[in-house]
Length: 418
Image 1 (cartoon, rainbow, N blue to C red):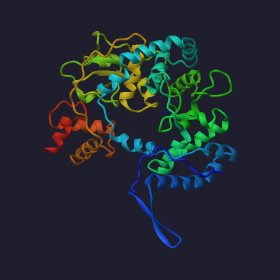
Image 2 (cartoon, rainbow, N blue to C red; image 1 turned 90 degrees about the horizontal axis):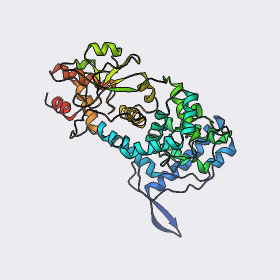
Image 3 (cartoon, rainbow, N blue to C red; image 1 turned 90 degrees about the vertical axis):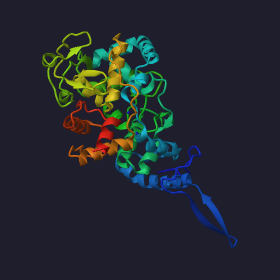
């Protein structure tokens, strides 16, 4: 980015079975046996009804009043489409260049520059107060809701109750649900206006409820931290507050595109390897104009598309954006969009387009095969994080190919053919 009134309204008539392919019950009426088909969504809705009755005591123990609870759950319903989207998100994969094509498209840049002009007074005040550049705040706004155009219309209590009941990440979503109830109890928003994404993120910059409770700001001074309305003021201030409290350094770039020299030691391309820009310059690393990168502090070299794609020297602010969303593609998207909104150039390097990305299952297979080959990835979760990148890099070095740590079909193919 989160006493029960009976009678849950069902969502759109899809079919989500949660492992139940169909349930048949026998109903006796006047001595005759009738077969009544019960659809999976009805089973799920009835289960949610029971779950909410059990949840009520936990909410009350967390300080939620009966009045707040009753108002919040008055029109709750089981959302089968929310579960379907939660199940399918692991299969969704894009290469970094495909992601950036959309995240930093020309329309998004134009719309962002317009948003900066139209909200210049607010953004200037936010920048001065929180010491976070207005272009960064606007870039988060642009990626999270297209500058407020797509804030999400899913009823939050229904979505979070559905996800909590489902149980796949029940503990996390129940914590978000209780936080959402606290927001309602504080009077920041009415239940019918508490809407957002299917996964519980809310408002212009998509705060999850627990983050809202800790970081949301009342920058308008009206007594409410309103991130949902058409006025984006509180949401923009909340985002700046979040970044500032996680260590944002005003004036430091998130990263700088660089060019690596011939013969560069690719084992140095890791977030775990940090050097000053002068030390990197001594190894031949230059910006796209051939100059030494200014000293903004210790930095790492990141190759999000492997040795054939763009290279970035990333600073501490990169990791601050990661606190908003840990995916490298997202961080680069926010950072590069902010640069473009400030008048900076497009990424100069070409990307190795045409690669088929690894699916979620292929990423898990890659991790299993790396670990079996002696290059431990510390788990097989299908997430290509620092441990997996380090394992890929070590494996590549062991077979004499460029150790760029890029999770590709080529690496998986080589592991299969060992």
